[in-house]
Image (cartoon, helix red, strand yellow):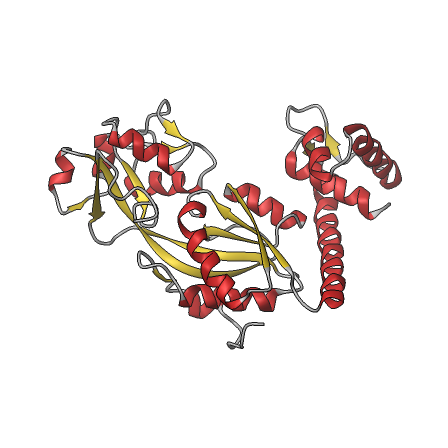
Length: 316
């Protein structure tokens, strides 16, 4: 049994597909399949049920997967520690961000971080929550900006900011005549949603009470597409404050933005990373730095003080 075989095992479990796992591991599919067959022969159990459309771990495979993830993560930790010792500190950070945050917050966040951590190179990746958490578990990302809470084991969580939601309406819509809007009113007006996989879709369904009422024929892949659909008079939607602000769709022709009635719905965005990540101290410092330099449309997370367990220290 080798570390590489365990990496292949984790990759297939994450992707549910041998070809995609091989692509992620930068090997050919026959090579990956051969190594996994050797691992199964060594262990004496079948690790995957190959009869389904999505390759799924067997019951025995699921038990072994927990241990395999821990071993792969610890090996990555050793590699990063050794690299850091040789180079004198953290040189680069692979940072992911959910698609409803990345375009509107990352430019600001990068400016803040570069001012306090000029020696750290930031490598960015945009995606959906599930994919980013999988990449974290596999060691393909070092940290991620996601909407909280997250259901994942062995993660450090630093809440950064609370972001309110606003209503996006077509110009001239009856709801636009009001100063504030009841979230439930969007459902009757025809609420438009992001496609499956976006956590913001589930939040909109809950906040607007739109479960079973949203049109499955009118789903968008991005907030920009939603805004253009609304501006075209197709329906209404709910946007995060940053997406509706100066760096987003504010001022777009054909679009009206209104606040929601109290209690105003909001979400909390946080920075998450593996608990055994060797540069956790630096990420705690980065989180504090980001909370101290937030854009105008958001506020520091209310729960941040209970999640920041370390005293401040000077950034390195």
